[in-house]
Amino acid sequence: MKQIKNMTQVELAAYVQSCLQKEGIDVVLSGGSAVSFYSGNKYVSKDLDLINAYFAKRQAIKTVMRKAGFHEQGRYFMSPETSFFVEFPDGPLSIGEEPVKEVDEFELATGTLKIISATDCVKDRLCAYFFWNDQQGLAQAVMVTQSQNVDLREIKRWSKVEGKETEFLVFKSKLR
Image: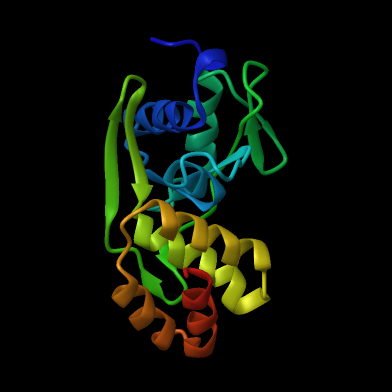
C-alpha cells in the first residue's frame, strides 16, 4: 500500500473511504475535490469533502480516522503526512432540494473512489452561484462542464426546479 505522504488527493479519498467502508461507514466525495478530479486538476482544492451519506456517528468516524493516522482539529481531520485535510459534512447526499441519484465509482490502487457524478458536481458548484452569487462556483461549474461529458438537459431541468432559470442561462452563456 502506498504511504499517505505519496498519495494524490483522489488516492487519499479512496483510501479514507475504504478504511471507513470496512467499518460500515459510507461516504461520498463532493465539493472542491470533486471539481479537482473532474477538471483534471485545473482547479486545486486542499480539502476532501466526504459526505456522511447515512449519518454515521462522528465518534465512529473519529475512531477510524485515528487508526488511519489522522487527528481531529476542529471540524477537520489532518495527518502530518499530507497537506490535504478531510471534512465530513452531514448528509443527506443532496444537491439543492434533490437527492443525488448517481454516485460514480473508480477503482484506484488505494481503494474504490466514490464520487458524485460530473453532472451533480456541476449542480453542486452552481448552488454556490445560484444562491450566493459565488463567481468561483460558476467558474468551477464551467470548468467541469468543459472537461467532462455532463447532462446539460438535466442541469437545466434541475435549475428550473431550483427557480434559477435566469442564472442557468448565464452559466450556459459561459460555455461558449
